[in-house]
Length: 163
Image 1 (cartoon, one colour):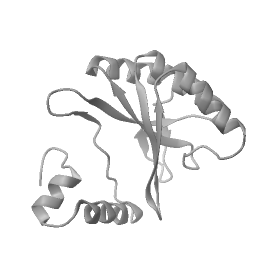
Image 2 (cartoon, one colour; image 1 turned 90 degrees about the vertical axis):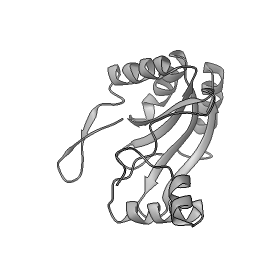
Image 3 (cartoon, helix red, strand yellow; image 1 turned 45 degrees about the vertical axis):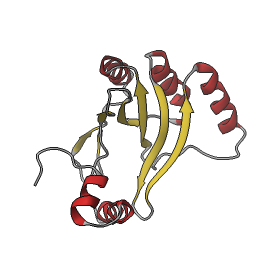
Image 4 (spheres, one colour; image 1 turned 180 degrees about the vertical axis):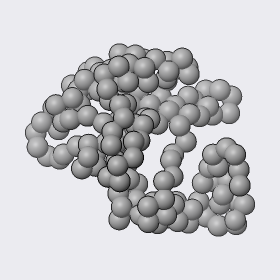
């Protein structure tokens, strides 16, 4: 009944279960069609860590442009994740902080050893770290300008903002 997002850790304490139980239950809810979003912005105690999760959409040819847009605006790409209807959240750490990291990542992908982690319609999420909320706002604006946060039609015909 909260008006604000509630963390898995808080729910676990309140319900006297492990956080893993909460994570599993959330995955089941998502698999059954519930819309549950990760936290979008957070500052750790002491104001040291600032991050935001962005829902992005692009073609395979635009991966380098998307990553460069984030890094050039002052962000660091912590991870990539998708919601799978059967497996729940599939997440991979990225640790991309520079154009050099992007080149190394793109070389790894180009070898064909693996493919990009994104859903069939092409959307996925990135957790972005930054030094300030202003930088996160600038990243969001740049991604929107390049239509990586554009509206896309969902399967049932409704519009969904990609943020």
